[in-house]
Length: 294
Image 1 (cartoon, rainbow, N blue to C red):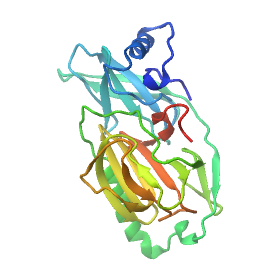
Image 2 (cartoon, rainbow, N blue to C red):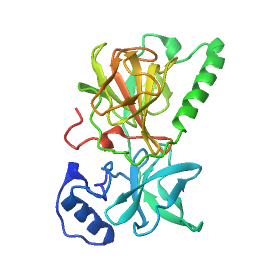
Image 3 (cartoon, helix red, strand yellow):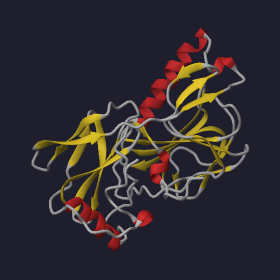
Image 4 (cartoon, rainbow, N blue to C red):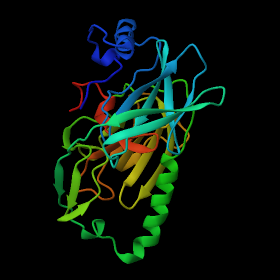
């Protein structure tokens, strides 16, 4: 994991700037990020986040796209910075974003994604139907998958998005992000969140300010909640026992919004916390202080 290009309050270390972007990080450190929102740690790897300078803030804010998905752009001191989520399935190598200026001109900005090897995780589930659902559930699964995809794709512009998250529950980290999953001996998709082993009924806290976007009870995810933090940054909680906030409700960082459980495809009670950025899963620990994930 690389060090973040832009420095925030959470990882202040003064250093001599070597180029324009390093100078920006140094200045942000001195100002305590007064001139912009706190950003996640940078890791230009599959499942990571790239912080990309897209021009001087003396001009109008540009719009940025990665493929068909809009990207969060925020002012950091005197520069506009694109906060780009990198999908777990991204092939390492050259990648790009499209930057549209206020005059309608579009330019391509390239960046490089480095490889990262994630561990293999073996999980035993007591209910084999959670590994290989029976055929009669295919319609339900397709319907739920389409709905969850549509929720993740929503975009709400905000001037208040802040990526300095708090961990929504504290306990043993029983499943880290990105690991290839082997469920009852069957290879499955990589783990797209952070699992925290906590007893049923443990308070689940909002990682940051936002609006509850969706709640539901789904086959794999169990009782679920989405919080929209704005500009394509979202939190997803799975396997809940109950909700304490409802869709449309504005929530504040640290507020109890749900209670943990073991619903859906779970080997026991825990909280599954996933973070989405421009529609793709990214590593939740990039949004926490370096010494706070536990």
